[in-house]
Image 1 (cartoon, rainbow, N blue to C red):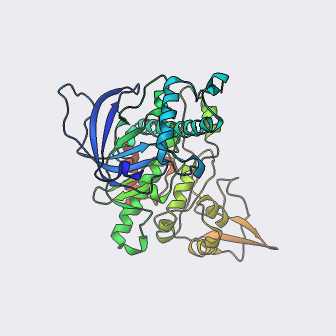
Image 2: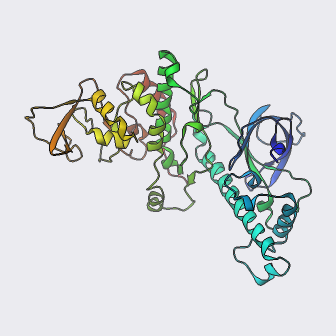
Image 3: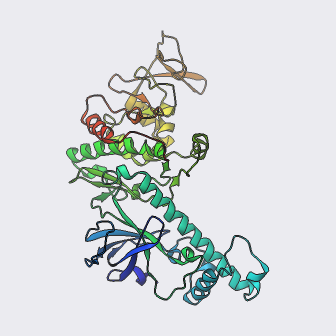
Length: 417
């Protein structure tokens, strides 16, 4: 079935209006498919150049990336619930007639279906709902983060649906349709296959600056009502020629619902941690570029605090999702032991005048002080309108200037409406 979206295949697409009605049509020829397909099917396409005189849709480039949410290709489908063409006819007919796949089963649903047919239809309905939810989440995330498109997000050109010949329309037609997004085709290298040790110092410095820009942007996501929830190496591309770092794939995003209060949103995102995941992904850069990436603690004081005096190794390791086996390396890189301590021992969370941190280890109390050449800041949650407090590169460094320029270009932070 993979031949449906293999290179050379032409796909008929409908451009969707905000109400998800088809406003215009175009054809896309697949030039490259990114296998294996998962919950979303991604491919490079060449769009036809023919437009009717009445066309007033979005301006489209010649080449783009097409991402579809086609339930037939979903990964994780049990072997006994694989898609089949004969079963698809029955499923689409049932959807178009609303004789199945309502929120509740009724006796009428069972009149003309045996248990096996019902089971197959139920599973197809389940996968269709997953695809529809993921499409809605990704589309909404790009719209809420529209100001970041073209910088750390790819440009979203339009939402589309695949025009499938012969399928039946009805009140539940969205369950039958295959929705997707047409996005900017971004070139560059992917962090999944990128080895930082193989590049020169200049390239490494550029990527380091770009990752600070990415951190600055991601730190503002929740303020705009978005949590990515799937930050990993495979979802980050670096384009050095255009000095861009691009985060994509918002199919698993959590999006703030309209009318959701601040308290409800805070509760919904309590266990999400895009920044922690991003730090984990960038760990290789931190370990190699310790002078550019400052360690920082995930605590939330009233105001950011310069804690150059002292900080706990374990807290840094935990905050940055550093595996335990690296704690000794961190300790040697960033700390020096204190053998004779004349100052009072306090917890940095309790005082802005903190000068040390005690670490309990075995029967001894080990005390460590940051090395003079290492600086660290609290990673405080920023107040409304001040995302820069999330970012603490070394003052005066090229990294700081690049990130500061990026932050100044952001529009005023505002809650989603």
